Length: 294
Image (cartoon, rainbow, N blue to C red; front, side, top):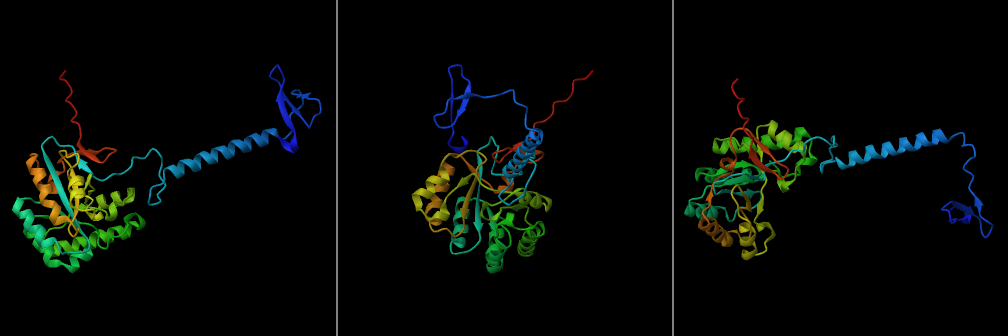
């Protein structure tokens, strides 16, 4: 209450406002309203409406700072695929080192496994012979950007340059232009997905993280890469992680012993019309039943 006044209700539930110990006075509800009450009420409604609009804009902000209409569908990459057959895809991001790569290719040959390497342009420039060897061994060489930036921080034009620069390098070395793109750091927003698809790429994430980049050791890596194994999984590894060559044989043995076939990412994606649900799972679009004949 203002000015130290106190308020209470009497036995009938009527509110009284008093000052100090003065006898309470019944509120006068029959007084004429203040002349400016309508203007004040309109002002409060206007302020409330502005707050609601600002809140909606804030909620609809993406990590990259794009304000969208709340009802707009969020663009998502493929994290995994709805499949009934026991197939999974494993993938290797190649951005920095190369120490394990030759031995990794030999190990994959030993198991008869073909996979997908998502390579950064600066890695391609530094190790062109390895890029050619990866392709020669039958593995996919796909895009992981040119310089490994946070894509949502770039303009649309800069994103297109990141995609085209690495694609040009890959195509010169392998004769094949990439059609898949994995955003660096797994960082994306709606613009990232839309620009990549406009440039002809499907955007790929993963739903099984081997955690090899954390360098936790062999057992944690095996546990992470084999937990909740299911058809359509896409597994993330890195070509130069510390415990890769010690852990990967046990991981591949687990996959094979459980009846799983390992295929490249492009082959695990579904053909034809598909959709991606809120969790990033790619599904076939339901076929419309033909109308009954008259």
